[in-house]
Amino acid sequence: MTQTFHKVRYIELLKKDQSLESKNSSLYKEDRIEYRELLSYGVILYNQIIYNRRHDYISLIEKYVTNEIDSLLLRLQFFQIQREDKKIKKDLEKNFERLSNVLIDSKSGEFSLLIADIFDACEALKSDSEPEEAYGITELQFRAFLEKNFLQMKKYSDK
Amino acid sequence: MRSRHPIYPQENVVVVNSSSISNQNDEFDFLESTTKEIILAKDTSGSFFAEGFTPPLPQRHGGRTTNGIGGSNPGNGSGGSSPAPSSGNLDGNCPSNPTSKFPYQLAPNNQNQNKNKKKKNSIEVKIVNGQIILRVTRDDMPFFINEMTARKKIYHAPDFDVALPDNLDLEYVKSLSTKDRLKYLSDPGILPQECVGEYMKKLGQHLLDPTTEIKVGTLGGNGATKGWNEPIPGTHAFNPGTGNDVFFADDGFKFHTGMNLNDGQRIDLEDNNNIL
Image (tube, rainbow over all chains, first blue to last red; front, side, top):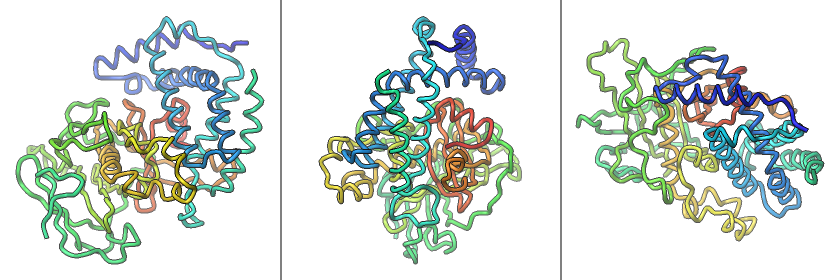
């Protein structure tokens, strides 16, 4: 099942942004409403890219939940996957033919919300040496959160 | 004592230590200790200037965005998201380019501008108890980046085109005992100070890029809805060209984190002045 993804409009905005960029400007500078619209299409595409790699994400979180890796390794690998996903998106945004063939799965939005939560948790995790009152969550809270998150992620593993 | 800077040994960066810093467990104690240590640096025109770190005067532009200093930001006229000149060698283990000049923006170079209107932009390096601390002044606002926090956030360094060292590879980490993993990022043998220094330099350059926008906001607003801590008030330095954002907590204007934002995070920043 696919959801509405205005690819024609997305490509139109990408072209406009890239054209402005070649003139040392950007949609961000010229038109915030269109910039915001461009971002919203970017979110849909990025969600799909994340969804396409869901098995990598699920496998990584499982390794942490089963104590195969620790939180440091988890973060190193998680942010590496995120960087790779961003690169895939960037490449797609330059290849309009490929972009126009992308199909969006309706479950990609839900799944990527779980990934966004993990991103937030990875950033919020504080080390044991930090004072109790410091911003962030402890390793115990982090683990509990990821275990709960993992149960939800698993629903997407075989689809 | 006069010495070359250990991380940036170029001729234009010289550190003068006039005395040791007391209470070195507090990484920002020097802010209250007047001019115990002085950074002396030579700008590109060959003249020296020296400045002791002084207590910051918290002046933020509440709720508004500032974008550079009207194009007069020194040292980088290229605009856009292009990297600053001293980008270093990024294809290896994040070394600094030995021929590059750091800080690349030591002093304003627009001599014709009225001094009253001129806003100061600079990067100063300080070594406290062997740890690097950068004070980056942007539009007269001081921001502090300390090595300990930069080490903790090193997994974001590639977002700023800093390659992680080869031995920071995941297979290596796996081979370490649990105890050793805890010390992993604080071990200079594994994560060399040069690498962290390069990351810090990039954070400083990001901040001084005239296309980087400074906006008051928060970090952790979404976490708060999950029952985590209250969001931290602070300042975002967001570059729309690179998509990188660096956040400084209001409490001492200390570097908290810096990363490349995805589109969803950009929307959050655009709509709510918040990330995470």
